[in-house]
Length: 420
Image (cartoon, rainbow, N blue to C red; front, side, top):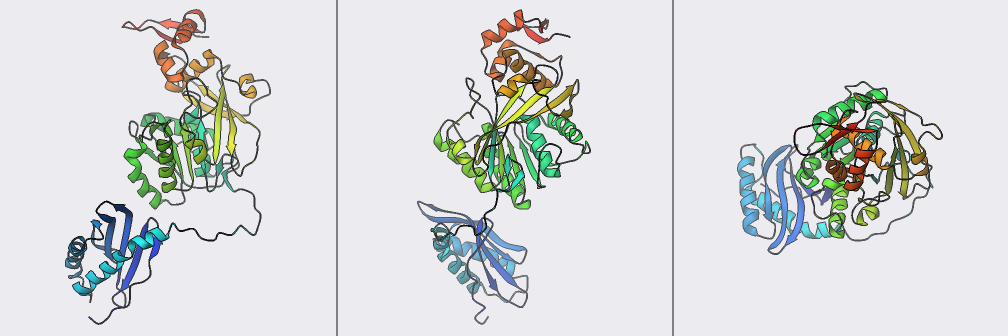
C-alpha cells in the first residue's frame, strides 16, 4: 500500500478522544480512546479500532507498552483482513502507535486554561421549570422522610417531560427518572395518579430506571449509556442518599457524588433527606450545597385530608429571590386524586415555614407509606422514618384520640389513624 492519507488531528467526541484514517474512497478507520488515566505502570485507556460502524478490536491497554499495542493491532487486522480494505498490518500498527503516542498530551491539553470571554448580550437565566430547574444546572430538593418528596418529584419530572404548564412555567425536555427508593408497583400507581392530576393520560410513560435496593454506584455505567442515548435529557435521582459512595458527611464523598452526576450530564435534579434534628438543610457535607446551583426545601402541612406543599428556595445561583410556591395535593383511599390552589390560612404551618406538629409528621409518614388511612405503624418504625423521638411518638399514640391501637400478633403495638 502506498502512503495513505495522514491521520486526522485529534478531536473530542463525547467522553472519547478520536482520530480517523482514510484508507479508500469510502473506507475510514476510526481510533478512539476513553477512560484515559495515569497509573503506576504507565498510561492506560480503553482503546477501540473501527472500520465504519464495524468494530475491529478493542480493549483496555497500557498505551505505553508496545506489547499491548501490537496485540490489539494484530487482533484488529484479523477482522480487517476479510473486508477487502487496502490497509496493511504494518500501517495499522503504525497508526495505532501514532495515535497512542500523543494521547496523553491531548488528554492533558483539554485541561489547560484558556481565554474565556463574557457574553455580549445580557440575558435572564433559562429555566426548564421556573424557578426550580435551570436549563443547564443542578438542583437538590430536600425534606425529611414522609413529606411528599416522591409526589413532588414526579410532578416536577412529568411537567418537564410533557411540557405541562398546569403547575409551573416549563420548557419541554425529556426526563430520565432514577428510582432507588420505592417499589416499582408504587411508582407505577403514583405515576398514573400524577399524570391524571396534570390532565394527562394515566398511562403516559416517562423514561425510568427502577432499582430499589441498589446505589448510584451500582447503576452508574448503565446511566452513562442512557445519557449518551438521550443527551438532552434531564436526570432525576431519587435519591442522593442512595449514592453508595461513602459517608455522606465526608467532604470527599460529597465531592465524588457531585462530580459523578456532573460527568453524567450538566442538568440533573436530586432528592435528599434532612438531619433528624433539623429539617432546614440537607443531610451531609457542605459539598452538596456548594455543588448544586439551586437548593430547594420542601415544606408540608396536613391539618386535614389534603396535603399542603411548599417549595422554598434556599440557594439560588443566577435565580434571585422568589416567593414560596404552594399548592395542595388531594387524596382519597387510592392515593393522589387531584391538585388545587391553597387558600390563605388553610395551611398555617406551611405559610409560616415552621416544622409540622408531631401528629402531622407521623400522619404524613403513614399516608405516604401506604397511601391508605388504615395503614398501621409502630412507634419504633415511625421514629426511624421521621427522625422524631420514639418516646414522644409512643406517648402521642396512647394519649391522642386521633390514633387507635390495632391488635396484631406479636409483642409490638401497632397504631392506625382513628376513624373520623
